[in-house]
Length: 257
Image 1 (cartoon, one colour):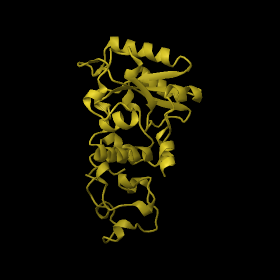
Image 2: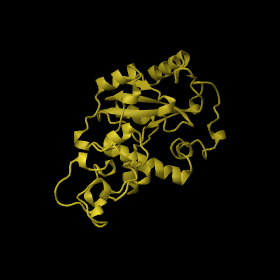
Image 3: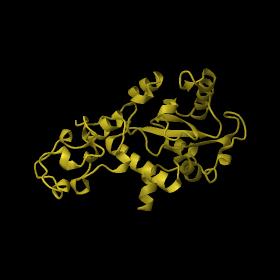
């Protein structure tokens, strides 16, 4: 795959010598092109949506994201439950990734949220958690960790990782902080024990479950504390109950469009 130059700003006619003019930049010839021949921002897109330059929300991506975006969906293998357990038990959560086309949609969605709400935190607090208008005062906890239910909200992860479809990916958002060890960028033993106790009690009706908390460097919404819970083949009635009827993003979008 092409990664040796700054693909995010290079027009297609620089990347593909078969293109001869500006018009051709938007209309490739009839010979099929493999994903290795395409700049990463065109993979998994129909030709009718190809653009000459990389969209702004896909520029300056990490090598990991570029590798994922460069992969056709049909070559992506979802991570199964055994892999999920291994990733979380070894705290190698950097190995989680999204389905390539879903990563693209996620990055576009995040850019739109930032443009409309000024920050992702404001959107999450106001629209997803219903905790106010997204101000700092809105996420002031009533008490300590896991002391009051009103300081906690469980909802679907709008953009779950690319795991098997019988795995439900939830996020537990909290108004209180969960202590990190600055030396390791990981939870302190006390915070880890508190989360483990909460998860075992709250999700006791689900036999197979794991949880993890993103390292600070991996958090997409660093302004609000949260950790992830994955449930393997749960009773969906229980999921509806624990999320207070929250609806996955794809279902919410279908009701709008």
